[in-house]
Length: 364
Image (tube, rainbow, N blue to C red; front, side, top):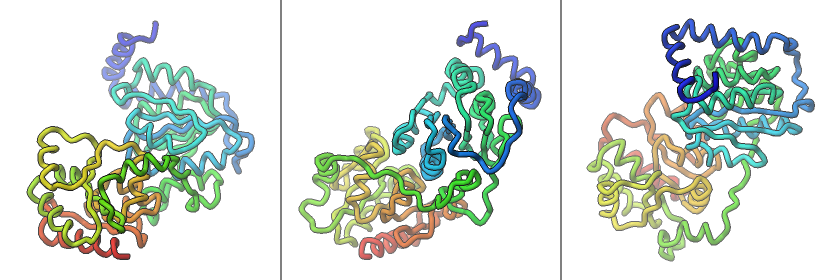
């Protein structure tokens, strides 16, 4: 049967009739048959002999960002390998921070069992990788099945991301590793990479003209670097009133110029609200532009976002607002960062904590 949209739909229907448990057993049987002739794993891993490395990335930008040092460490460890990254389209820019890799992308709506795109991946990646690393932290069956179908002799994943035969080496990070970037690095360390925490990602290659364009109109000839507020995050997380209260309270207490940031182009009502503050607005920036913006900002104030994640990875100053469950996972304890635990509504005390943290960092 040709692998087209209709055949994919029929296969998904058959899978649904079988039920997830029985359907998963059928997929495992296919992978087991494909990998049956492989020799057993042996350690230590002969990294020099690995010529093809496939990394299957999680489909969320923030999750990919916290995998970047792990990806860089894996690429450095398997230094003789041609590296391919399979990524969802919204994560391509972040994945592109890694140099000298081949990026294969798909759209989120295509991430389904037996879709035409994943049918192509399952065929094209078959026997095309010596090592395949699945970087999801939980079971994502289309990506797990894709990992198994590579039939790579070494198929690595985190505990909880899937079972044998899809994965034949499971990595279990210690509970002591709370910060997600450090927790993810356990994969590279388990395979034999050393000094993973010292991995430095490539510097941004923005030209001076591009950087000047990003900060033009923000500093207004001020000798101090500007402070950035992720206004759209606060607007969507806490509502227009509390967000405005926080912004209006922060602007007078820092000596720096202030700009507002939005992670995407605001809609008409959001743009009208943002325009009330009469300060510069940066929105819909590329990852490279964000890195340049961070490098020219004294401090940024945001939430559990890509902006904060980039600041943490590249050593920029940032204040982040997190839930109690998020703060240890996404906010490392470094002098450049401050994490604030948020409540369901941003009360006056929370606003004061944010202001104090931003002022302290801006003056440090």
